[in-house]
Length: 303
Image (cartoon, rainbow, N blue to C red; front, side, top):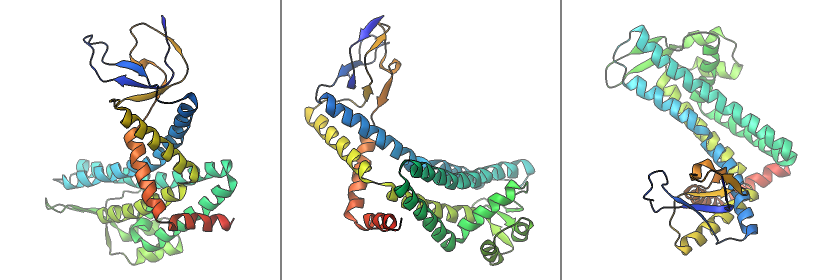
């Protein structure tokens, strides 16, 4: 056992060693003071939390893609093939519901840490989802159909296969078998006897995209702006130093480690410089449109 006297900001030397078991050498970065390194670490933590919320829509995006691909490749209406398409549709509908439930929980957690901002965020969530509900019929239908299948019913009642434009449908009148709100019933009443499920999925996803964008933008507080700025300045200094490495990590403290250590064996926090730069650019463009901060202030002033 030896002690690796590395801590704080480090990077992997990109030069490949002749030893096949040692693909890179971990190097201490001396560009930043201890205080600056702590600031970088704290900023990275803030941004990583933000990345998680930005990526929240990925599950529903993948579920929709799998459903569409499965439907496009459907070649028969035998029960097994239809069951596979139904499974993918149910996956999309469940992700649709989980996505909304997640945001409610996430905003509830924020409210515990910062009641004023959390209450404003909660009101904004209700307004955004209500607006989407009122202006996107497929968003409502996806919600109702998800509740329908949860009661044990099949979502696909009819299919049409022609190779280039496969379609699957649910019978409108079947949705009346479950309890639905008066507003949802009004929307269902307007639908054709056979509701195109691919169309419901496509259009409801557009509603989800709108909800995601609105909620993410509202979440961009001064703390996130400062974190992005800290990381962007750090990346600029690294670029000017001409250090060439795509693998940067923050190591906490010193460690006793086997002599043939590889960097992956250490406890570390990886740094996503490309992601930080992309978010910093997004935030900059958003700040140019001062209406978003006016919306935040408007909701905060209502609390």
